[in-house]
Length: 230
Image (cartoon, rainbow, N blue to C red; front, side, top):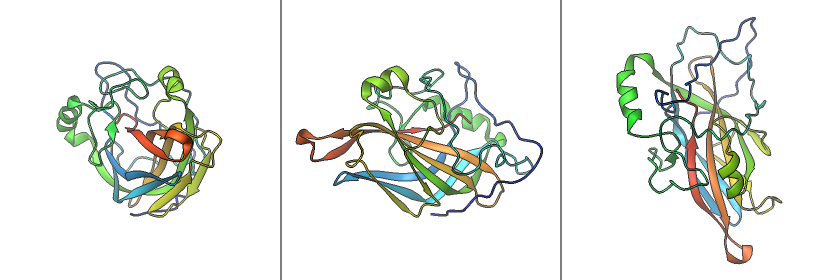
């Protein structure tokens, strides 16, 4: 897994990120390889970063970097707006996990679906794949299942409970020691270009962690990959 410390670039202008509007014609989430696996053992969440980390983006190498907009370690907190509009699989906290499309690592793909492959085929000349490093990884408690049903956050960073700068291949977060306990957690990876000076911002994953009978063990019931639309 490649990692890199990202230094904010100076400059007067800032590039507005491409964002898909919600609706029936909205583009799919961007594709990426960042986290390969999540595991729970002895009350601790282990996050395994992928060996080959990359992202598919509409970014063109001659565009100005977004580093000056959102430097490493500063999470631009998203309002909890549900993020349920547009095409593709939904259902974080409200069903739909079993039938949701899966990523290459087996995560349920939020807003993914059959239309995604068609979109990427039709727009093959508009996107490129870039190698990336993970500059920071954040973990935050989102709430109970009922809270997720009513107010699930959109894709992107949230106020993190703990942040790991320039993580190695594996990161551990002790869930059992948190006062929040079981419920929904977001894990976010701040990704930056390996060979291009560009801030690709955050790839996120929402996990439903359940405490077993007696409170002695924890398990991951659901894991969703929640990416911004390309």
